[in-house]
Length: 115
Length: 114
Image (cartoon, rainbow over all chains, first blue to last red; front, side, top):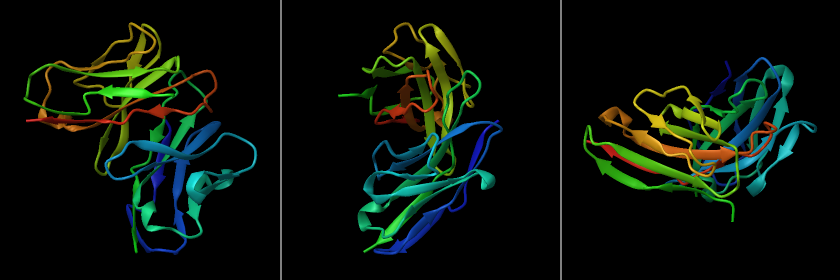
């Protein structure tokens, strides 16, 4: 069974600080990895995704993530956060096997950016 | 515009009163799924469908039913809602040939059962 672990429940930063949100997954085969963001009162939006190839993927709004296969990790980074990045961030994994192409989500990390 | 549309967006209902949350997508996606989001638990899959007339249970199917009579629609049915089904519900869809396909989410349906 696939699972996702997000290390931080709540992260509080000041504007211009650097961000790294941890994500580790468990799955016995080829996976696709995603980060989604949910702004207050809104639905999920895809930030970035990894399927194959370059393990460093760039997404929208200046976010990037690095897939490290040996560590089963897919950490999200941003060099300088803004107040508007305040949101909840979800890491998700989608396995390539089986008949259910479901996304398995982590429990989310709430990011608060203070101006 | 590619869309996953859910209705209603907000609903307060009473225990035991049957309700249906509709979901429709305009992208000709084979795969559709329902999730519920609860604080501290992230999103958990309720049911999914690989294609018309093909549905199966996800991680938390108890108390829910679904149907997939048409490719574009995937309604979530709560036959006898209970307060523990108070949650934020998301419908999602994607092509399923190739797991790298992006999953699109609806805007969510806030359901309160009193």
